[in-house]
Image 1 (cartoon, rainbow, N blue to C red):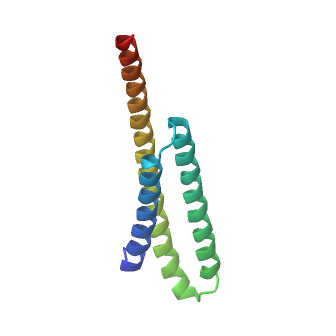
Image 2 (spheres, rainbow, N blue to C red; image 1 turned 45 degrees about the horizontal axis):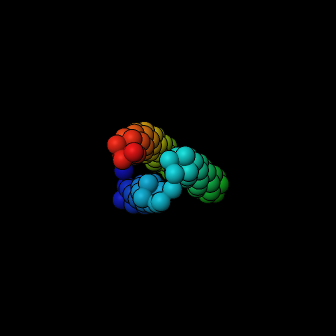
Image 3 (cartoon, rainbow, N blue to C red; image 1 turned 30 degrees about the vertical axis):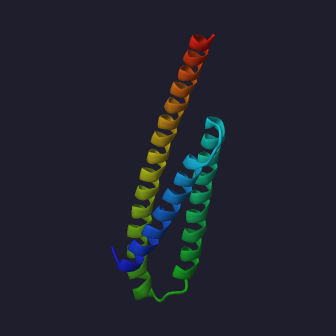
Length: 118
């Protein structure tokens, strides 16, 4: 993988990680957080699709030799980005489950505290 593709992948993963962290740390209900995570994942997918379409248009402008090389590299990057997106999506789902479990645990603790204080 070239350094340019690594940089692009790093930027995308960094942005996704930052967005997820921001959503998880924001003071919102569990449902709001899950909705926000889902929306951000959708935005990320949309942005990736848009970038892929832009690159596809640029590919058509290249000569045959460059085109063949670029298609190969583009395919490698696209596959790698899809794998990374799938990994990030799975991590988001895991974080969502963990957050839901923590919220439920806090609700149970709160009910227990209310019961003992009455």
